[in-house]
Length: 350
Image (cartoon, rainbow, N blue to C red; front, side, top):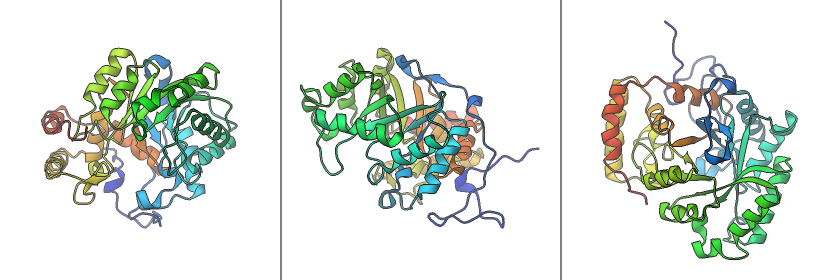
């Protein structure tokens, strides 16, 4: 019987693995899968074909204060090179990821090494204010897009999200001369193919979907094994033909390593109710020999309403490891036990 590769959080150091200086633990390298081997899904009315897992690149910009480890320039570029060879054809970045846009810049370098954006890759970025400000004026949005084009080495963008719209009011976001007007203008000019909105508060995202300006919507930390606050947004997006993309299925790490190792959920200390439910989920997964991370990821990917699920990757080895989690064989009996626990606390984040 073939030995199944262990998920990253279960792998122990061996004499043949190199320690990672930035993070504890070591990781085995499993064989890469070509990207055409993973069944694709249609990204709503964009018509784009994307993998069920989208590669998140926030950490590629190196945020040691946020993530607790550095990501070198070389590692970041190697990670994107591995992504371009692997099973996932959807990449997500943002103007603000990393110091001075390092995430986009490193992606751009990897693309340059392979002669540009491959035809089968879908690359999305986001418009942001200057770091430390809330300047979401139309001029700032146009400048954000200009910066992204330069860093990525592209002359147009497939998909651009209005990022964290909660930084301003809905009235400011939709006012003449504001961010939405600028994005629509850039789309009409052919600089952007498709528009999306990516934020936190569900009520606000519902308002933006009602403008009918967006083809894709991202919600983070709100459709997971412990919180399904995004359910109304998912339903509304489906009714409109808007693609729903789910970010942060692990809630910041708790649904990978458990609450003892990661006590926070969605950037804040988890409530006792969440901690208790995750502990029960850990026990159930262990009884079925299934990694908690696999269940957390597939809770999202198994839902046909979810076009793609964003998982951060900051090391080349993460690509194959994430593919293992996405394809782990999870018995129906485990889902029968997990789903009631998952639904028990839906709607805690808002």
